[in-house]
Length: 266
Image (cartoon, rainbow, N blue to C red; front, top):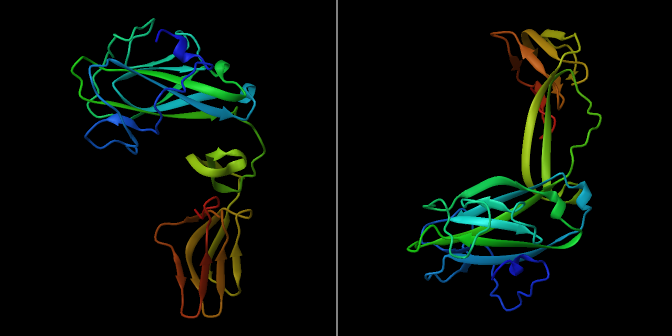
């Protein structure tokens, strides 16, 4: 095929089509087995797919690729040259269809993330072209599947911290504006010390609310919630208990402590 097959305008209308994973593999794989392939003496298999990017390529800070691969592959975005191509399990530099991968994969696993240059991404139609190489002439399996993720630049903004422990959650989704399926979620706990904590202990005489903004609350002795009294601990509130202390709710008393995914009670 030479190199023409990598180009976005290459006519691939005669190629067979199918969804990933594309495979010859008897063992279980970390993804759905959708399209069986024919295994013969072929050393290199070629794949192409189109995807539509509706955003501004200049606002993409990073392109990440995850693969399920057996054995090695070279991945091209919009026909870019060998220097910018992503090589996984195969030597860099010009390759021919007779070249083998430089590793042997027993059972394909999910690998990544790998990064590729964002300069080749365009608004509209894009083409991923891939050549998958076997490890030797007697290989009995081949697997190919890929996931591409685009990340925008990190943006700053004001985040209101409450006294005590604050959990900052960062999520990525596959649709604009935080919609669609969640791709990834990470968090970090941040301690905000405003130089003050509020001691609390003893039997409550009236309905009491412990809120995040007034805390953190320092439980210096047992808190007793007697009959007819409600203690409410609002989402995001931080409490510290001295050793051996706790909250006791007597018959007819009530404790309401309901955190949320984004405002935990700590």
